[in-house]
Length: 194
Image: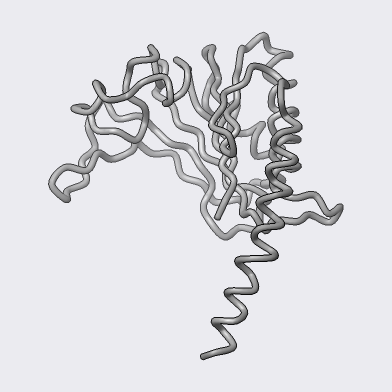
């Protein structure tokens, strides 16, 4: 299981500029593998790239970073122009079923994704890490006069600014404890039976 914290950037910014800043925050280097490509729409089991599909710039898996980074955007246009518009993962014919639960209207979306079992050298868990990442990215965006909001995956609530970042820390602690006390023993027990 992973903690996926989303930051909604409400004003225009170049996707590569925010990608570079986010990579700095998670310790990526020039050697970090990434892709920048248009997302596909699946229809009848076939992957299609349509002109209206948004883009994703993100790092590849398995590179030892503290978080998997993905940024969803549209070149020179908002990712989600209105609350009612469809977001990056849906087909064009499903826009009528989406509501405010898909997040606010935004220019692009940043996603930091980290395993619940994460621990850094200082003993911080995934929630602590994400609270720090949101805070640091928020300060960087604030310095540029760019509005932003973030979503707490534990509660589904969307917050402005630094409001309720402490909830990520406590939720991350609970998720990490659940992983260590429930999931890991089950995995170990299952492995010992084989």
